[in-house]
Image: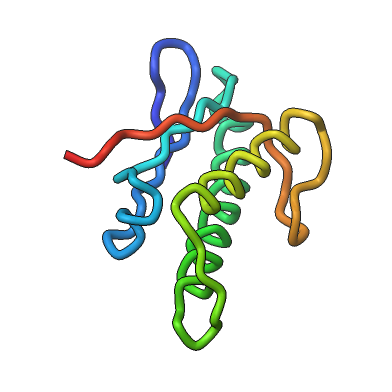
Length: 109
């Protein structure tokens, strides 16, 4: 969940196997832009909550009972919107906590 890379901490979250085809990724790596472990932990907790909400949304919106088809691009755009709003200092949708970070991810093998 939290990794020190050089002098800054990063958040790592594995994408659930069932959702990997939608995201086209096996995990998210997000720089927390801090070398302070306490700050990094707080940011990581917030990002864990946000990625959990994103995964719940992906599962719900891909459920045939919901009749809301969603594409991989839609999911990535939603995640990028959360990141953009964080960087602008705005509150992300659904009352999710704020944190400043960027998205980077590892492609599936």
